[in-house]
Image (cartoon, rainbow, N blue to C red; front, side, top):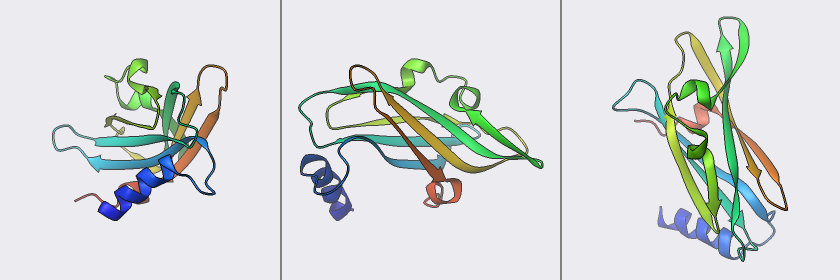
Length: 140
């Protein structure tokens, strides 16, 4: 764990050949102990060039199957208590965004797509997809 943490901080502060700028670093999804559904934690990072703050908004979509139909469901439909302000970010090095996903009955999730859009002058857009079985594999 310490080695992983050290590698994470090193990649932010002293990037080698990794792409610089805003990145979607990690996504972890765990079954919720309190509510039906899942809790998620998303880690955004700014690699290199940390002299300025990066800000913007994150969209999250769960892609899967409902019966024999492919379906994409945005976070707003899976997490009614989540407001747009909950998915805004502003950070210099990294920021964690967390929330809850309540999947509809009969929906089989296959992947989660994360889209981070930077606001301001640069307006970078970064997207990354995570396979559902992989992000939930650390579940107890």
